[in-house]
Image 1 (spheres, helix red, strand yellow):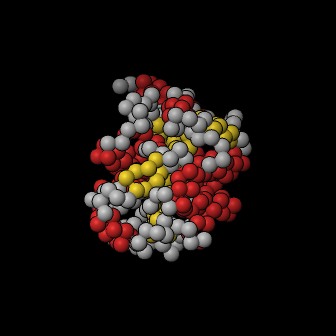
Image 2: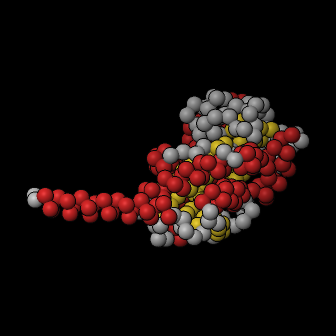
Image 3: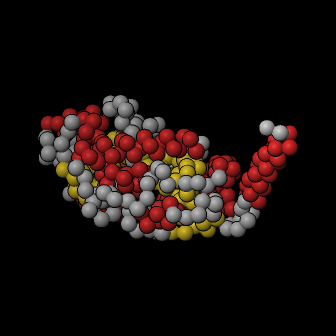
Length: 323
């Protein structure tokens, strides 16, 4: 190869490098849209607004929260999967993103291939609660009771295929117990019947459960995360209480469309993780019962794959259908 050809190739390579650097350094130049595949007002929406404002302030461009509820997150998620991969359209995903591939026979996107992980923002456990009439003061006592009365006890959930439903089915598969699922159209109706004693137990979010536990209307036995909950630090995890390896957490992460430049992913990850350290954001997460994480993109990718494998197995074994 001649010296002139070598110089020419080097200049072209340098030009491409500087062009890429210039693109990442100029980003963002307009507002960023963060799609929340839920209606306004829920935990996912609150988290999006808390961190989105901080990232917007840090980058000098507004982060617009775009609520696209419906279809079990599929509508909003599909918008991000098909968006231009330039960093201006992001998704606030939750555990449902990992559950849907096992529940839905045909998704309009690939939950792994069509997305670029940015960071896992936080994780929140469910809490296992029973009605006071249930003669169990610990997880081990509940398991013994359920084994002594196969199929005679029931549990509530906020809907077929919901996080609470799958947490209970994972519990069933790991203990070998049998109980009946009573699905409701949302958490509110499920709480009403649980407090009234119409159903025996439920895996649900700690925050709305705390007032009932403090009032003696429900009894909390354990939380479902890998570590103890910040909302209920005195309560053991299911694993600690006698079921090693059990974990069923809710989680919240940022995904971008596949093909988004690595430099933009790195910038976004840095700003979202920085936002998590703001005192008011920390306080908001505590109120929601969410533990801050702030992972790398690689860690989120591994987490998502592991969650998809786990929940697909639970769904298949339990024969859960939402069609």
